[in-house]
Image (cartoon, rainbow, N blue to C red; front, side, top):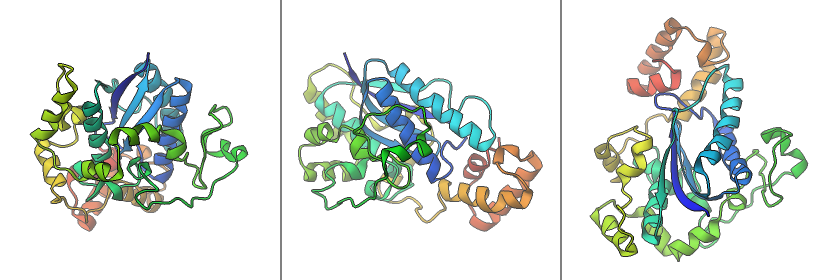
Length: 305
C-alpha cells in the first residue's frame, strides 16, 4: 500500500545542480524514478544543493535509489567527478492526514522563499508551484513540445517512461504530465486557498490546524521539513519569509555558470573538480572582490572545502 512521504536529499557544501541542464536532468530523473518504482509525485522543489519531494510510494528507499543513481552518473560524467553525490542517507518523513499534507506541501513549494532565493514562491522556476491551478491563475502554457523519438537526447535511449509524459523543447518533462496535479488541487480545494497557503506566514496556527486530523501524531513544522537540508537556521528562514532577504545577490546557478563558462576556460580546465586548491583560492578572491558574497557560497560553488 502506498504511503505519502516528504523526502529530502542534501549535498551539504556541494552544488548538485550547476546550470539549467542539471536542473532539467534532475527533474527528469525524478520523473523516471516515479515510473520505475510505481510511485506518484505530488509536489517538488529543486534547490542548488538539495531537493524536496512529496511522493506516494510503497518503498521510498527504492524510489530514491532509482532517482539518485542515474543523476549521480550523469553529474559525475559531465563534471569529471567521482563518488556518491549527496549525503549517504536521505531524510524522509511519513505524512498522514489532510492538514499534515497541506503543511508539508506548502513548505516544499515555499522552499525558495525560505532560503532567500526568491521573494515569492511563484518567482522560482525549479518547482511545481506554477503547475498547480495553472489555468485558473492565468498561467496558460504555450510551450512547444518535441516528439517522443527525440526524448533520448535528454534521458538516454534505455530510459522507460509512460506515453503520458510530455517533454518541452528544453528537454524537460512537463510537470503537469508527470505529477498528480489533480490530487494536489483537490486537497487545496480552490485557487484562492492555494494562493493563501503560498503567502501565509509560518505560525503556531499551522500546528493547531493539523490537530484537526485527529491522528495523535506530531505536526509538520518548517524545522522538520528542513532538517534534511541543514542550510540555514530557522531564524534566517523566517527573515527570508518576511521578505527581508537579499534578493539582489547573485544566485548559486548564476555564479556556477560564470565559473564554468567564463572563468574555467582561462585556467584551461573543464570542471571545478579539476582545479587545484591554489587555483580555487585565486578564483575565490576574484569572486569575492567582484560580488562581495559570503565565503560559504563561494566554497559551495567552487567545491572548495
